[in-house]
Length: 527
Ligand code: XMP
Image (cartoon, rainbow, N blue to C red; front, side, top):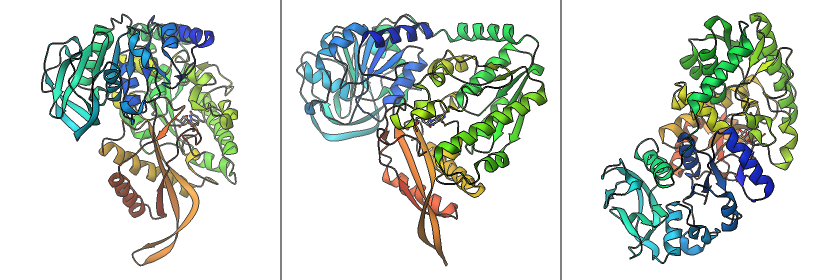
């Protein structure tokens, strides 16, 4: 499974063909990710439209490669460079006749390539602005003039005889433009994907590029439910439910496929995020939901262990043991998990970096060797097709688009020995950080974020109190898939506010630091 396309070789072409089959499509969209903080929102939006969107590395995939891939359409995203800096990208991609949607920098790049003047605007435009449509265009079908769009640019495209202006904003005389197969928007439709932005992307994908195949989530859900029924018959199933999107989708499938008494969901408490249990209770209390508090079991198994690898091994042991015990109690003939195809392949879970190779085998929910057979109805799905099934079965978006969370849970966010106190601090810190990201509207644009309890000490003085407290390390990343990530440039005001809350509200915390390293070399998780 290809996470980011770098080379177009016979092998990658054949991998893409098998992925098309998995996704029930004949079509492919390429996203050249130019490094915008919103890149993953473009991918998410295309996933929501049910089309296969492959992220391509602009430094390595050339026009010759694109021709071999024969995509139905191409999106070139925004990014931190200026078109005049010649960002690494083969501009002949714009000359292939394949429909292109340039977003922000992507638009400026093709406009400059086709002779338009692109330069620094007198006013940097940032924030929401009303869009004035100047002509009827298929890109804006169903979108009204006055629609609010998010602008974030310092450069602008000057009017040019060759480019048809489709829309303007106060500071952008060419807020959207068109030249034959080339389409462009200066603003970020992916950020307003819930509103007209998604409609714009849909217009490009289906209207302009003429895509025919959407992932048939309803059909696949129906087939999967039928398979589950055939496999399970009248027997019982224990489902490991975590509050994340994959096991939630399995819960919805099992609900559709089986009779109520046949399914028990087990939620394992102990190394979970502070809001996981609330999500599970909110959306799955109609199931026979059991909460197993395994905190003591985890802590006992983790006592005295400091090496991250050994902590992961210990965690896996408890996870397996709890599920086996609960399955026996329920007389379950199957244990169901939300394991995805990608979890089972080497690229799954993001463990591609050389140093972490051994951990691929340790994926918490793969190859556990239970004494009862496993039911993994999503093991031929990738994240977004699984989400599409969940959406089709009525699961809410807030559940489906939660940040990824590692199977070994908070233990990978605790340095040194895992203790009850440190688990408590890690959970409080995650709660505050994520709550503030949501409040500031930064949750969706960050791909993932976390707080780490380090073993570093720091002197503190709080009121009359003074002593040594601990250092919390925060991180947040922008990414399209977790294989390569950039540290997220969160606003200073935001970081200051979060840091104050963390030091005020968590007694043990003396200082907060923010990680500013990309992957590679640093992995997403601390441990
Ligand atoms: P790394 O830290 O390898 O993480 O850069 C990439 C993505 O994978 C998640 N991750 C895991 N997920 N079991 C999982 O299910 C694990 O052992 C594991 N380790 C890391 C990580 O949170 C990030 O999303």
